[in-house]
Image (cartoon, rainbow, N blue to C red; front, side):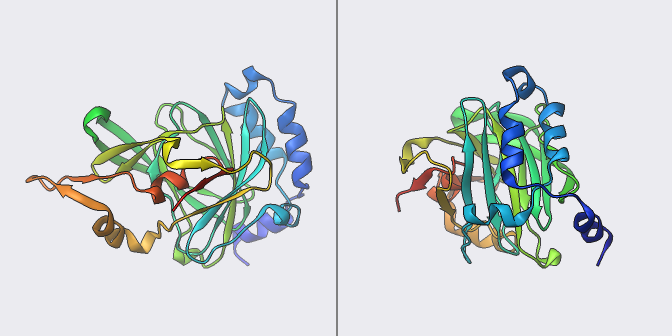
Amino acid sequence: MDGVQGVAASLRKVPISELVKDLQKLRERDLDTIETPLEVLRANPVDPDSIRPYLFWNAQHYTRNLIDRTDLYELLAICWEVGMGSSIHNHKGQNCWMAAAMGRLEVHNYHVLEEDLPNHRCNIVPTDVVEINPSKPVAVDPLNPVHDVRNPREFGERAVSLHLYSRPFDSCVVYSGFITTRSTASACSRNDSHPGTTSVVPPHSVDMVENLIRSLLIEHTAQGAFMWKMAQMHLQGLQLGQWRVTV
């Protein structure tokens, strides 16, 4: 057992209901800060057994599972098989916090040097990598919110992350190499708004980036910059847990 697994095993775990109860006590001004919700997540490492009714696994896709939603926030559990990862994205001005209920994950952060949304172009550079584990929840930097999440193959195990968003969001910006494409809810159909709803997200395997580029490439310029059409696989991965893509 390595150091991270040892610390995780020694943590006092709470049922998901206790975390939800504490989150529901937060006021609007609390969710406008980064530190207060982060402290709630630190104080409430979640017992994985308590979230099993919310979890749905898919061997090809990571899944987003809605646990709780209010006017101020939403809480989702995301299930990651080994090697899966998200697209690079932001949360369109919303605050975001992440905790690991099972396993561990990497958050890769990026800085936007320039952005031209109407023409679907941007220039982003990687900045740092942060690990999420049961003893270390993290917050997305509101000043540099562009990131992706990965469960690297070398970690060798499934992972479940808890994502807290404030406010609940229905659109974002997805970044593909040097190109950015806006995602909206127009390609999604509403399923229902009740906790426990699952959406399946097509794969963004860390090991399959080249194949994804080939499959989504619709145009390239002389400079080699790629323009990607927003595919439903990107859109679904970034929508609410209660949305389901119609494919």
